[in-house]
Image 1: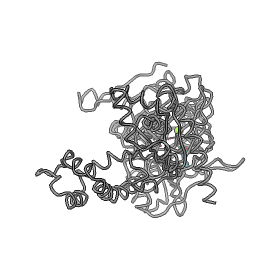
Image 2: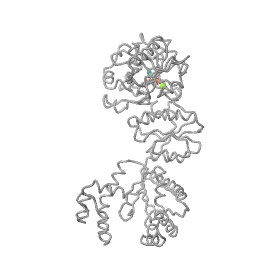
Image 3: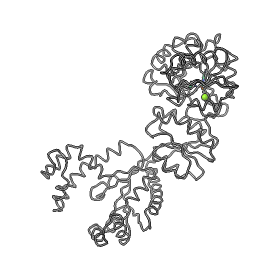
Image 4: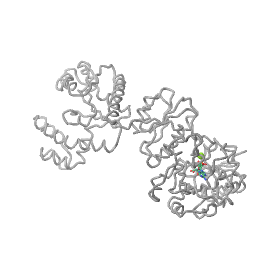
Length: 557
Ligand code: TXA
Ligand code: MG
């Protein structure tokens, strides 16, 4: 069968042409045919929901098990009494607030109207009003409720573009309507209203928090959070199938993003595939990677999750590791799709906060050591940058400096650094006084920043780590040291200075011995190249982090 493609991505163009395409799609449906349709969640495979024969064709085209009922798509709550009975007032409250939108409600079914093929013989029916202008126009034009499961072949990830519908369904259906890529990317949230309190059967495009805000607490079906025991039946029959599964086995790693990225780094080999947040993709240069979106953008993750799973099928990866968002908002749906793909094979990465403090002489290799921490997914806190930011924004800090060193601020409020430098470097007592002021403001600000960003790995980069009291924030302080001769050569090359000047600069600093005696541990750098040292530093930190995690775990018990 030739599948007709209707391009309706642009609905602002030629109105007549658009109406003709909508009428054509509606006509196919009225006559018992199948059409791929766009919705805001995923593409649907539509048929006349009241036509038993048409509905049966959906099951054939998808290879869908007969016991898995379909959702009826309507244009608004006024359609509810036609197909449902004993409708609780709460259904109208929800519909008024969330329709059109990604909410499917399970209600008691008027079995005299809706054929058993649509509901798979259940006495309840799933019903929703999709938020897509093209599909709403098609339903209106057809004048019938549309039964539509997701348009993928059963067991494959759902389709979020018309192109993937053609891949799965081309030649099996009469038409595909292209309404552009789906805005939400995961299927609708399914809420069962035949029980009290209402029960979440499938997390989806409408966050649970939004529902609970409107109607109070709801319960969550077991099938949402784990696999069911042999013989146990989920309330949404579709939840028992191992959907969305790529060919390679999937492991989902939960926990704070830094921690889960590190856990995957430890586990992944050269033939592993990785699904990760954008920020961590650089950690997996040896692996095939599909990005899920920024760790803070769950809508982007929802839009990409199926594609990320789908695209591994064409590759030779032997196992897949996936980072998982927390379960707030759309995170519950994204995590659920990943976990289902993994058959709920889940590894928990520790979501602990670990703060390392790095210090050491110039030329020892602090920059490469920090790069190694960044490679492990850590966040670098550059105290110098924080100080300058605070100078620009914090009135109290400026006033405190000005009170002690009058005249160092220009008329426009900016700091005359040269002048302040001249004042403080002349007398040691003045430098100590300035540092006292700066650290008094800096430490709470750093604490606030770390608190705000949450768990994970942090490294504090501070010249005066030990003198400032910043070391008290750290789980470990690390002295980065290197043989003096090597440091001379390095800073000559790095800063393009003479040997004599390099030696002078080094002799003006504290010796390695000072850092060694004051820090918790030492990272010695006698490597030939920065890249070689960075690799050695990476191994050092992996071991150190394991020790710290172990300690924290024991401490928590
Ligand atoms: O976003 C969506 O909901 C998409 C778009 C196309 O609207 N549709 C969709 O349909 O995801 P489908 O068939 O892939 O998933 C429907 C789910 C299945 O898990 C099915 O078992 C459940 O809804 N379901 C349907 N009728 C039900 C009923 N009466 N009681 C409990 N669960 C039901
Ligand atoms: Mg589906």
